[in-house]
Amino acid sequence: MDRGSKLELGRLSVTPAAAEALDENGQVVENFITRHQHGDWGDVTDEDGEENEQALRSRGPVRSAYVLDDGEILWVTTEPDRGRTIVHLVFE
Image (cartoon, rainbow, N blue to C red):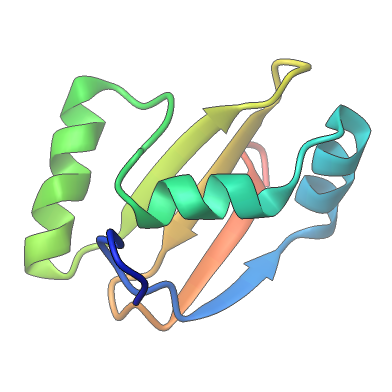
């Protein structure tokens, strides 16, 4: 883990729809991955943010949500075992 990271990401995957949405918005996935890894959960409720903080201690799933420039919601989800992180759209 790099300095300042809050969690291991494991294997990273980006769904085709998320990749397309990022491309269409001229945004890069690395920015959102870095925010997620460093505990910037994005546009989640305070309750969801608290659940993420608890999940860091209890090895639960960690989920961040980010609004893209066109208003589409991008999710970044790290599995409880920290073996995989997936970037996907809210409807996927």
